[in-house]
Image (cartoon, rainbow, N blue to C red):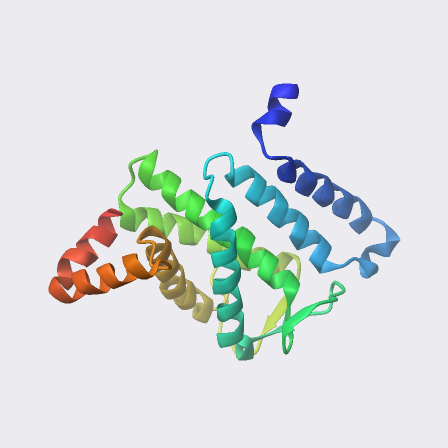
Length: 218
């Protein structure tokens, strides 16, 4: 038991306890008084604590994920409205809640961890690893938020919802573009100015080689 406790960062167990407490309170009559920040912060703690066992740089990456999540929310704000199933306390910009940035830190952390594991440990082709990550992390998280927790409504009409996620086609297209760009961005470390300039230079010299490298996950 002690070994299991020591295997993961203490923040992982803090997050797990927080999630358990939230679930317990959710099944009681006070569910309408629960704060979404509390749930997503607990989930973020558990995810970061879990991933930190395998990626010691996850704490620095979490800052990058926070910034990417903020930009994504600001740029796409007009496409959805957050529902009132849970109480929200803090807002970052207009109607963008802080809780959703915790959400993005968790999703991005799981996505890149999954992508890296598929490529490095399972030796899966880069393009296939990207498809698996998008379908098993990004779209699953979106589906749970929309269909299970009812956290947001889309501000556009959709002719049909695509199973098994039951999401509008717009969302699939968005994640195919955004999800792949995110994975490439993190894989190539483009948040580092030196890596970014090198990537642009190589792209200008031989764009087809860069695309081939990305497909392979190199």
